[in-house]
Length: 313
Figure 1 (tube, rainbow, N blue to C red):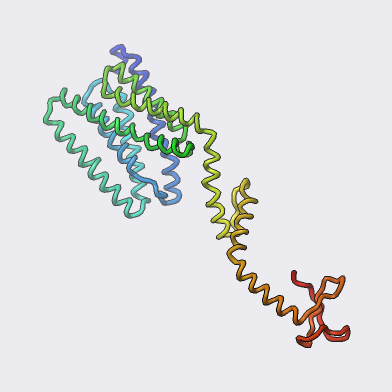
Figure 2 (cartoon, rainbow, N blue to C red; figure 1 turned 180 degrees about the horizontal axis):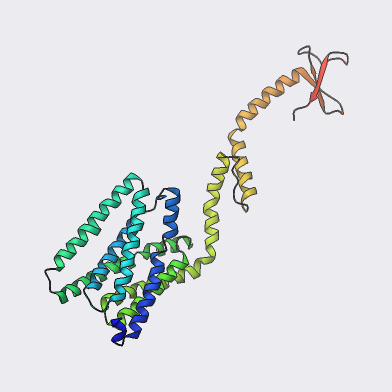
C-alpha cells in the first residue's frame, strides 16, 4: 500500500481497475481451452499468441520488479504468466505432433533463450540504466503486440463482417488500454503509457468497425454456410440442416442427385418401356396393366391367361 501512502490515490485506482479488466482479458480464452479439453483436440488454431503473451508478461514482470512503484503491474503480470502457462500446457497436451514440436521450439527460443539473454545483458548495466533500457524494450515489444489487431481490422474491412472480431473482447481490450494509459501518465512512466496509446487507438477503431458492420454479420454467415450445407446434403441425404435453409437445401441437393444420374435412369426407363410394350396392355378405365403370361405377341383375348398389376408410371 505504499502507493496510497505517497498520495497517489489515482494511481492506485487506475492500477486496480487495470488489474480487474486485464484479469477478464486473460480469462477470455478459457472457453476455447475448455473445448480443447473436452474434444481432446486443438482444432487447428495456433499457439503463437499464447507464447507471445507469456513472453510479454515475463518482460513486464521483470521490468516492474526493477522499480519500486509498480506493484499493481507485478500482480497482473504474475497472474498472466500463470494463466498463459496453463494455456500453453493444454495446447501441448492435445496438439498434433507437428504443432506440439513447433510450440516447444518457440518456447525454448523465445521464452527461455530470449528472456535469459535479455536478463544476462541487462546485468552489465547499472540498476537505473537497466530499468530504462528494459522499459523501452518492453515498450517496443508491446507496440508490436498492440499492432496485431491490424490483421483482424483488415479482414473486417475486406469481408464487411465482424464475425471474427467479437465486440466484448474489443471492448475490454480498449478499457484495459484506458486504465493502463492513465496509470502510466499518473506515474509519469512513458514505457507504460506509450504502448497503451496505440492500444487505445486500435480499440476505438475496432469498435467503430463493429458498429458499422454489425448488421452484416448474419448475412455473411448465411452466404458462407449455404454451399457447405448443400454439399453435406448431397452426400448425406439423411442429415438435417438449419431450419431457415432446410427446404431450399433439400431442393438443390435433389436436383444435383437427379442430374448426376439422368443418363442411367433414362437408359433403364427405355429398357422397361421396350419390355412392357411386348408383354402388357392397359385395361381401359382401370389404370391397370394386363400382362400376357403366354409371352410376346398380339394383345391377348379376354380369355387368355393374364395377370393384372398396377401400371408403372
